[in-house]
Image 1 (spheres, helix red, strand yellow):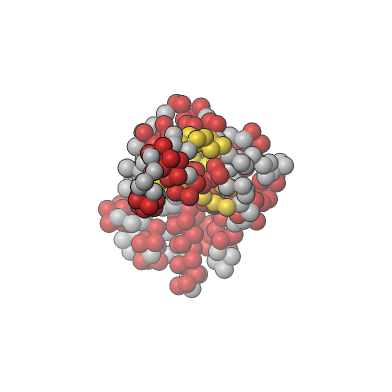
Image 2 (cartoon, rainbow, N blue to C red; image 1 turned 120 degrees about the vertical axis):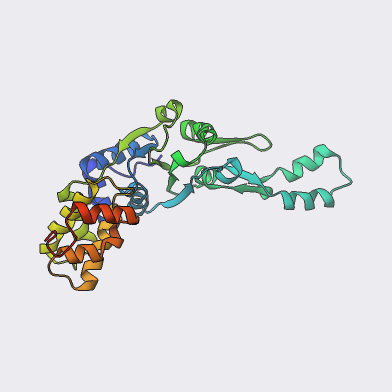
Length: 292
C-alpha cells in the first residue's frame, strides 16, 4: 500500500481541503490505517460521516473510489466476480468440436471474467480507496468472502487462479452496528467509532459547508440540532441534515431562529411524523415562544 500521508497533521490538512473536518481521533485512525496497511472499520450511528470520510480520503489523495454497497443478499457474484456466462456459451458453441479440456481453457480466461468491486479494487494498479459500505446490512456469509481480501489482499478464483493485489487499496468498512461483525473480520482491521461531533466541530462544519449562513445563527442552529438528538426519536438528525437545515435558513433569509421558524422547517431535520410530535412538545414549539 502506498503511504498517502506523512503525518496526522497532514491527514487533517488534506481532509479539510477536501471538505471534511476530522477530529483528532479520525485523523489519527486514517494515518495509522495508511501507515500500517490495515483496513479501517468505522462504526457509529447513521449520518455521522462514515461514508463521507471514505470519499474525502479518495479526494484528498486523488485515488479512485470503488464502492461495494452492502445489502441483504449481496453475494460473491455481486461482490467479488462472476463469469460472463452468455459469452462463454457462445464460445463453447463455436468450439463444439473440441474436447472439454481444451474448451475449458478457452472459456475460463481474462476475456470472460467480470470483476466486481472487491476484485476490481485488488487489480487496480492506480491508487484506490475501497469502500465496503454498511457491512452490517449484508449476510454473515459475506464476511467470510472478505477475510482473504482483507487479510492477504488477494482473491482466489478456482477456474482462474489467485489474483494478488498489484497495489494494495486503502480499505474502509462502515457499519451502523445493527448487528455484531465477526471477530475474525475485526482482527484484520483497525477500529474507529464516530459519534456525532462536538458543538464546536459541528459549527466549524456548518461554516465550511454553508459560508453564507449568518455567523450569529450558527450557534443556535447547532444547539437546536443537539437538543433534537437528545430526544427519543426514530431517527436523529445527521450532520448532513444540519448542513441542509443551514442552507434552508439561508434560502429563507432567516436572521433570527424563532420557534415558528424551527417548527416550519422541521421536515429538513426530522423524517417521521412521530418525531415531529416529540420535538414540538419537548422543545416547546407549539407557538412562537420556542427556541431563539
